[in-house]
Image 1 (cartoon, one colour):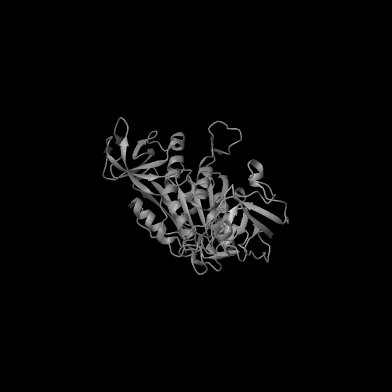
Image 2 (cartoon, helix red, strand yellow):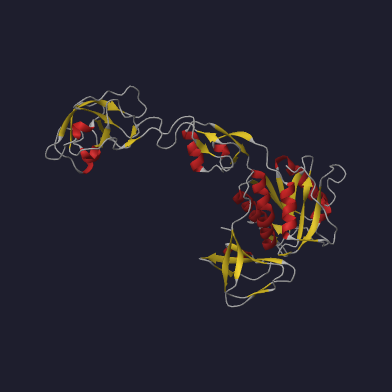
Length: 440
């Protein structure tokens, strides 16, 4: 949770992108660690190193279905002169007390079963007659063993070197090794490893709970009838998906009408399940920009250190922004613009790093690279603004997708990168080396 009030500046101060981001990251703090069951910990960040308590595999075991034998007993085996061995029993995975293998003997063994005492190697069933007492077998029978519990003889038609087809104890990890480092994000392979070494729970920072809501009386939910002067609410869906992509547990709240009291009540109702609140729309200075009206003074008197600071940034799109904290726990709140592209770009630049910080990650930003600008004409950018243009990146080149309009959702859907045009650059010609933020 937030522990400090956002620093403020005069109403005429034009914030840079970096100033605004630094303010957010200086205010947001990683969530407190908790102990979670393995599957509940997926997507979370470890807060401590995990040490292996037991080696993997915990014992020498067979990597094949076949027969456990002594090397000397099959040293000269061939199809013409097979080694005939006495089958003394079965070794199945999970069963205790395997039979001992002595000279001239073999034990039928299954994949994953422990190498029995006295045995030195494993011959696959395909190298034998399957214990059926006949000559070399082919086809389906070459992949079959005699019925379980069968004894008698098995003929081996190929030699096997010492410890062939044997997975050695500790060949994956050894007891005392570090399995996972603190700071690791737990995905399926990491969950698998934790389960394999016997960990039922793990200490992590939980995935942040992010509440996303959009504002505007003109908004209609997808699937409903679109009346005159109305538009579908795409922002809340877009930003909820962005929050989940960043690693959060995201809750989408239906669009709130342009009423300050309703918006304030809605946000306060959501604080019980929010580590971060993201609103979209209503942050400019228009007559119906209710987010400013509803939140500009929230917490100033009742919650010292709280409140939302609305500011102008030297960027395009996304000039109007709001940031601060709300409620008794000083829950961080990001108020983003309402135009679809503006809200998306603002989320990528500011909300995503905030979510990753709450998770306890150290690398909170999208990867960046340099690319050659492709296209037939120059890109233009307003003086004094850092512009973020939608782009399509591939093989070291990037081309702008769509225009600069902050309403062009279709172009955004085709983009996989943002082209960054610095504040002091007004035109970028094709062939120029540019900075690119990779979104994929």
